[in-house]
Image (cartoon, rainbow, N blue to C red; front, side, top):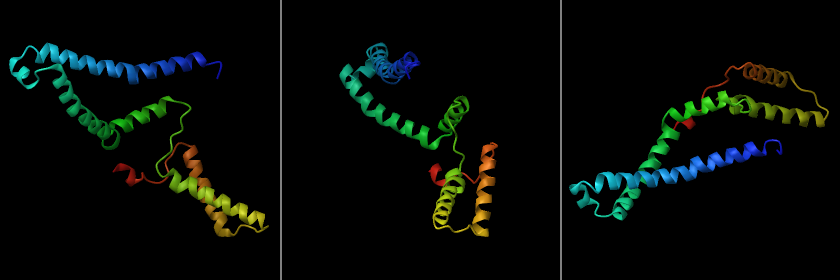
Length: 160
């Protein structure tokens, strides 16, 4: 941690700047610019927005809900976020991508089999042929994942 303290500080600075500071400044800048360069000079718009305060309140009342809806669509309904995550996973060597179906088809069955094996071993019992077959199937699925393949199908409940 001490070796990369400067880079951590730089990263936190950039996050704070781009996520919070620059965002707020950009929003205020947009409101001021549009009001004083467009609305203040157009008499028909000046009737609708007689002051910057009124303009700001209308802008906020419409803009915030609209941007929340757009953000929701971005994350839940469009393929844009999926592409962003895919690119992040591809570019980051420390990130491991869970394959669709991985938890349901490989990870949890493997944990269950291991627990059953531990119980049997603690009772000095041997595995039966069915349990050995299940273990072999999970091993094959794990090898497919290790080799970069896919197991299972995407969970449809995540696409709502």
